[in-house]
Image (cartoon, rainbow over all chains, first blue to last red; front, side):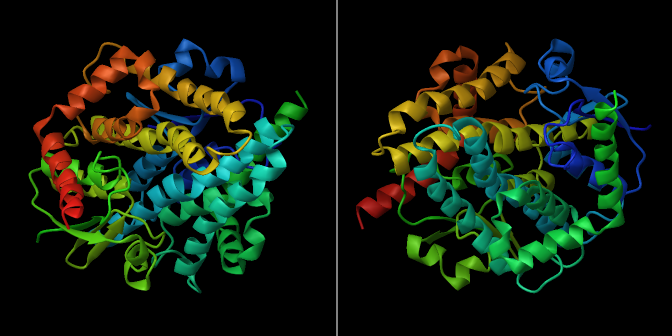
Length: 216
Length: 216
């Protein structure tokens, strides 16, 4: 059964791969699972048909026969459990890889998204310039910890796993905030992720959606 | 092997059960798994010994023989996979329960934590009063979606699962923000969680830590 995922019909990031479907595409490519994509417009995302699958009116979602999932973390975990190469066989190592998935999504991503949201929604507010250092400091606290833990290692815990995929997906997404420049090891870590063939195929696929929308 | 978790030595919330060890305690109680607790001070949390287990210098962490985990989401998932009663046997239903865990942590919790952080860190800033409605609106968008999806159901997807545990853990944690009052079904949902014997045992255990610290 070929799964179908949803992605933005109109890429808000001009095809830079910053939307959350990128992580899901990357995971599918890592396990060599063919997939279909249903593009949804911003209007369709808030309509009952999509809300039945994605109750928060976002992308991505995942459909595979009767199964309907949402949340990039849950989808990537499902793909990793069904396929091979994204989760270690050893049960302890597997639990640690999943820990890094949650760390990426619940500890590292929120302060980065907060900066993005502030830029987008409060960039014209009088307090924006005063708040930005506060937000950057909060993000750096997390990046300091992550950088210290990664050290000189290639990946967070042994071989490349769904934990790395999710962490790199989060860091890649917020690359243009300029926060990674202070951390050569995190910068190189993201680069290792980006150079994986599966990442490149995923990136090309989402970029093609943007290209097509330009010529529509 | 009895697992050991970490929790705050000095409860920042005066024993109200809002720290993230509460979710882990609750999951352990649901599966009837005895556990030990190691209390850490704010100073110890930032020291190398704790950072080896929890690289972001937070609580909770989880140790079980050689296995060391952190992130409440990863720990609860590990407990749910080892025990019985928190994840359905049916694989599709299991994947959906895990989806709600990620939704709780990555979609519902961040805007609630953002309000808490603003109150704590920016409560005395001139922009606080102007920003608060923005933050509340962001949180309500998520709560609206959650309330609509839950509807009249007892739990989010069939029987009580780790997804409900995590969602109720998140909503319970931020109960005193006053945001739930607009949603009678979410309020009742949290109440159903709180009335579970396992929740009560977990709450009593973390409250006892606070009580003990008062008489130390």
